[in-house]
Each structure stands twice: as C-alpha cells, then as structure tokens.
Amino acid sequence: MPLMQKFSTLIRFLKLKNPSLVSIGLLLLVLTGTQIYGRTVAQEASPTPPATAASQNTDPTNFTLAKTLTEHAGGVGTVAISPDGKILVSGSSDKSIKIWNLETGELRRTLTGHTNPVLAVAISPDGKTLISGSSDKTIKIWNLETGRLRRTLSGHAGGIYSVAISPDGRTLVSGSGDGKIKIWNLTTGGLQRTLSPRSGMILSVAISPDGKTLASGNQDLSVKLWNLTNGRLLRNLKGHTFYAVWSVAFSPDGKMLVSGSHDKTIKIWNLENGEVIRTLQDESPVFSVAINPDGKTIASGDEASNIKRWDMNTGQLLQTLSGHSDQVRSLAFSRDGKIIVSAGSGSRDETIRIWKSQ
Image (cartoon, rainbow, N blue to C red; front, side):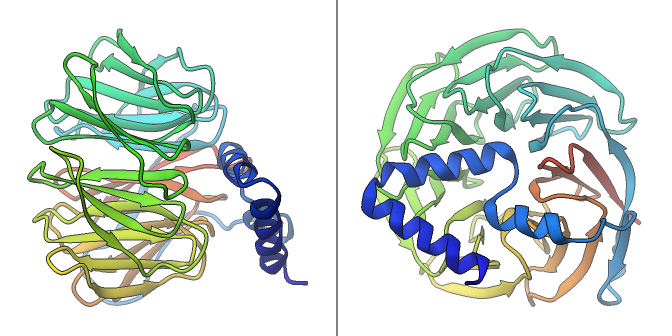
C-alpha cells in the first residue's frame, strides 16, 4: 500500500477510536519537524545538493543565497523581520528565540524561558515588542531591544502554532492546537475574546492590513475569515483537499488572501466574493506562504526543502531556491521586498537562510 494511503488509513482509524489522538499525533509530528510522509522521503532521498537558485523564466529579479545562520540546536520553525529591516528573530525546537542583525548575520541575543519548542514569533509594527508562542501552551511578550520578558499569557490548552499583531499594535491574536483562537489586548495582556471554530487545530492566523479582518488556516482544510472587532465569522473558504491549511497571508492591499496546504497547492482567494482566483500547483506539501510587500510575488516553502517564487497575477513559477536539507516551515520578506528569510525545520536542517535580490 502506498505510504500516503497508509497514513490516510491510520488517520481514519484514529478518528474512529479516539478523535483526540489525531490532534496529538499531528502535534508530535510538527514538534519533531518531520512528518511521517516527509520522513520516509528523507530516508530514501539522496543528499541535498549545495545551495543554488534556479530560475524557471527570464524574470529580471532573482534571489541568491547571501548568508546561512547555524546557531540553533534544533529545527527552526518560525522567523520574523522587524519593520525597519534591521532585525531578524527566529524560534526553534531547541526552545530558544534568537535575535540577529539581519544585514551582518551576527547573533545579538538569545532568549530563553519557554519549556518546549518555539512555534511562532511576531514583531509589533513599531518594532519594540516581540511575541513568541510555544508548544508549552504559553505566549510570551518581550522587549525586543533589551530582551526583557514583559509578560506571559496562559489560557490555551494546546501548543501555540501562530501569532499575529494588528497594524495598530493594540491587538494580539493566537491560534492553537486546542482548536481555539484567542484575541488579546497586547498592552494589558487581557483576554478579549475566544473563538471556537470547531475546525481542528488552528495552524495559522493573519490580520488584514486595515486591521478589520482575521484569517485562520485550519486543520479541517478550511480558511475562515472573522471580524476582528466582534469575532463574527464572515466567510468559510473551502477548496483545499488534503490534511490541513498550514499558512495564510493577506495581500498588501487586503483584497486577496493566499493559503498553502498539505494538498500541495497554493490558493489565491478573492476576499470580496470568497472565490478562488487561481490555484498554484507545487510538487510537495506547502508549509509556508509570504507575499512580497509590492504585492507582485508570492514565496512558498515546502516539504521538499524548496522555496519557490510565483507571479501573483499569472501564477507562473518564477524561481526555485534550493539549499535547505529539510522542510521549510517559515518565510519572511523584508519590508522593501529585497530579502527573503527561510527557516529549515527538521532533524536534517537547523539553519536559517537569507536570500537577497539581485
């Protein structure tokens, strides 16, 4: 029986016997940085070739590898870049958060305090506050400049897979393996609202540029849109077909949403009518998506350890960046769109790679 068929059979069996085991199994797979499907491929695959940037067309803007950061002692599941483009933050299965000088690659500070892998990081719009979420079920709020821990938020009953901060810097949103979305007052740390979508684990959250809409990528294959102010469900976007939606991102103008899924596709949604504008086909599960601030290109990270650049308007594959030796769990663009940071997450890759446009 093919591996993926066996895996699907196992999931159906767990759902019949004990549905909670499905979520527990998925959490363990994420924390190890390698899923059943990916691990089998990794064991059988030949060694990954040296870092290259192969272009699929004549697009004049290509990215090449500028630096590789190797200080983490575990897979890197999340990265974020400060609004001024000077600071890079990374979170790892080694339970630490590292703060880097993005230009030089120098490690400036290591933050410790989480007791399990760090799954999510975000930086406030003013560049002063760092948020981290962990599989230890807590969210920590740090002073980014000094590294001082300001506050720890508790309340989730599962690991924190994703965090997002509103454009005005006042609201924090967290998505968890407990199937809940929590909306917090970032200034006081007070819990404002809990959303219970009944969609399995919440794997990704994002806030629209105008701060009015919240998007969640969910284990049940859906993408849900919420009114951030009152928590009302606005739309339930369906179209992905296998396993989970791992990543969601709003376009800079707020008119479109991009989602990446284990079904090996990236979907571009029209938020006005909820329809799919375009589906981009990858060759392996897509774990992360990011949109260039100019709104013209999408970057995706996949299980096959590649970063791909796509034309937002045509869906054309522009470039494939190779060099990671395990799945790419997180991506971030600098505000000027000239840098992409990628995170290798798995037993065979504990690196961060910085790519610059030519």
